[in-house]
Amino acid sequence: MSEQNQQHEHEHHIVSPGIYVVILLALLVGTAATVAASYIDLGEWHIAPGLTLFWNPVVALAIATTKAMLVVLFFMHAKYSTRLTKLTVASGVFLFLVLIGMTMADYFSRAWGRW
Amino acid sequence: MSDSTAISNSAAPEVHHEHPPYQRHHFESVEQQADTTNFAMWLFLLTEVMFFGGLFTAYLIMRNWYYPAFVEGSHQLSIFWGTANTAVLIASSFTMAMSVWSAETRRKGALLLCLGLTLVFGFTFLGIKGIEWHEKWEKHHIPGPSFSVQSFVNPASDPEVYKEYHDQPLAPDMAQKTQEYFFLYFAMTGMHALHMVIGVGILIFMIFRARGGAYTTGHVTFVENFGLYWHFVDIIWIYLFALLYLISRH
Image (cartoon, rainbow over the protein chains, first blue to last red):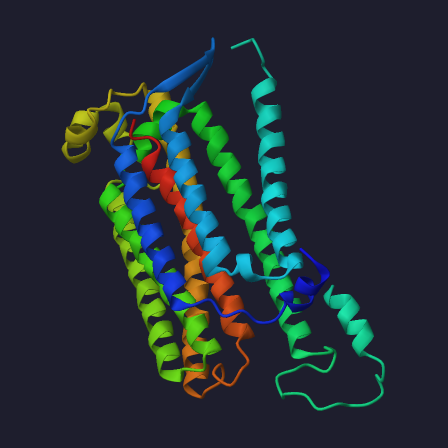
């Protein structure tokens, strides 16, 4: 983003009701999709002996994350906010993933191979 | 970037220049005040992410540990009520977003309508949650001394759930671990509901203030930042719905 654009970045941006309606419909469709997907057995992927990935939770969390991103970007105006806010949101997601990732890495590797 | 703007504008700091009544004295401009409070609100939400993150991590590990108990425990939840509540909360997020728009465009009537609808949806959500919790109470599925493993050691004794899932009986020790599931269920939905109750309280306060025209004269920060809080609570529910209700159906 150029310097000129940054100058205008923090001017108050009003998001139009049309966008809110589109996001509302997208969120409701996402809810219907995730409920429908939970009724179908999506199978599993045997990555290695003792390590299996089930697709149902993966799909449910992917849809939930898509919905959450729509809420953050449009309802919470992150798309239209200052770089500082964008950085704050991104660092929050990153820190959350680090905490979960590190905890799970430790948890799953404690008894590695001794199942 | 807003810092550098602030410095370049403060050439004559000793002069008390004109400003709107809602601008605090220690802010250089209304924009700076709005940016600062917005930043602070996001920082608060990050602490909330850490708080709920701990619960989510506990759920992830416990579910991995006592997988059969967590699957059969989650079969006790009603997909119908869960889906209905998700729709109610998404609708409330929409009316909240519309509240912010009404305040920004200085429409007092629309603001009151949207805040009122958000409040109604908030109460609806809590009411449905109450119905679900009451059912757990009746079936002795609240962890503690009066917890009953009947539905898990003998699934056929719980015909309503059995006809849908045909669960296998759990061994008594694993059946006890369904308490772990319900403990996390009540901890997570309970903390979420507490956030809703706080939100509903602030909404009532805002409706009283909005009636006096507090948010429709150009100062929308409070409505905006409350909106951030309300949407955040919505996001938490989106994940709770997926994790507690949906992922254990297969």
